[in-house]
Length: 221
Image (tube, rainbow, N blue to C red; front, side):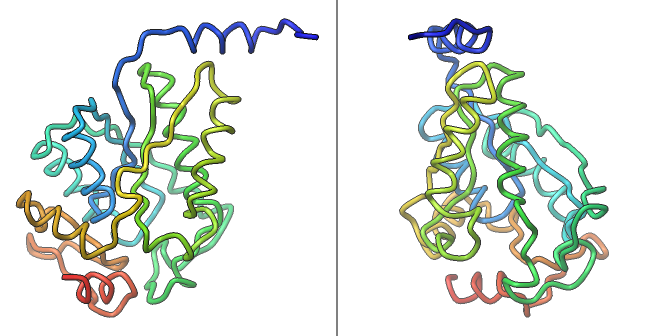
């Protein structure tokens, strides 16, 4: 028996809506999100970048780079959201401290929250999909950055919104070396930051060269 509800009426209407080819990209100016943007652009998506400031130690650097990267790739203006008061709920060395290894960088449910925020924005601008930088090297780091997590996020968001929302993973089968090559070939390597502890000093990006992300980038370059 089919029970008529306001939600399933809205969802049915959402399924029948005309596709817009718009996608909300979680964009931080990292290698993963930058290469994702490049590949989405090559597929003719209309990209709406979303930059989330959650108190991350390298936030000032990311905030400066996302605008430059968005312009060079040809994305829409960067939408910004500040949720830095998240520190009242949880703690992580990724927020206002020095992060060195993966354990330091663990922030509970970070990517889950980011996908929900991207979904909310997607609903507002009538986008068909959201996207997150997920490469093959990420699958076994944190639970909320595994393929199954992102696939289940599609189900969760489709129930939470009034349309089906796809989670696009344009770099899914690529490793860090391949992603760096994509970014380098588009002349954008200097517009990316990987270091968890990067700071902006005298007009330049200063990285720690010690954290797991710095080491991974150096080894893959």
